[in-house]
Image (tube, helix red, strand yellow):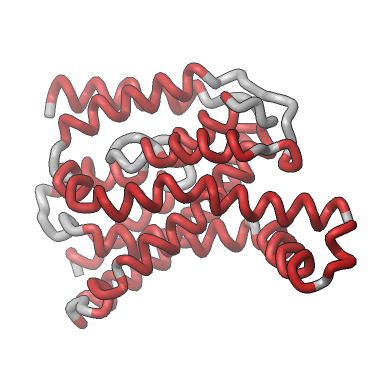
Length: 270
């Protein structure tokens, strides 16, 4: 029972921190350290929790996703649809999501072992949290004029590089990608949407790469994994809604302050 409760706590932390620009992977490492446990040292459980967050975020953006998928196939199979500006714009946006996901996908394949090694180094997290804090502070008041339709190939590639940078534990994926979006002068709504759209293919890719590990999970872990999964999914949904409001109000500095305090504590006392 105590072990199951630990998994639920991990699910709560993952669900709360995944959409927020404070690094879910970094917080899970800190939690492992505080619990003094090796139970969660591999990436398998973290990927299970990431997929739970994926489902919650997918649900939040389901209307956008279904519209984009519909427009994509209409553009391909219905030639007359190519003349419709909204469908053409959605088709282009789909490819820009793919393009922006490529850097992190390549990095995930070739840097997986290095990332796993870093997950055990709490000191690295302290510096990474401070870097994320700096990024958020720099763009705390940014609100550009670009909309979804204004996103370019150069924008997608540069933002994708920010997502690649976020493979380092402690560098927030949502924070880094949001920073990239705002630096490329997207407005806050468009920046939020693209940041979370980029999360979806990366999450699916991580799951596919780990199917072998998931299949070999000890049956005894089915219940705690399941409890963590459900907890994460629910918490991610509500944390995302809260985060959307924070970004739209230009209050990113709050997260920056939190990360400075957390990073300093880790570097000084852990």
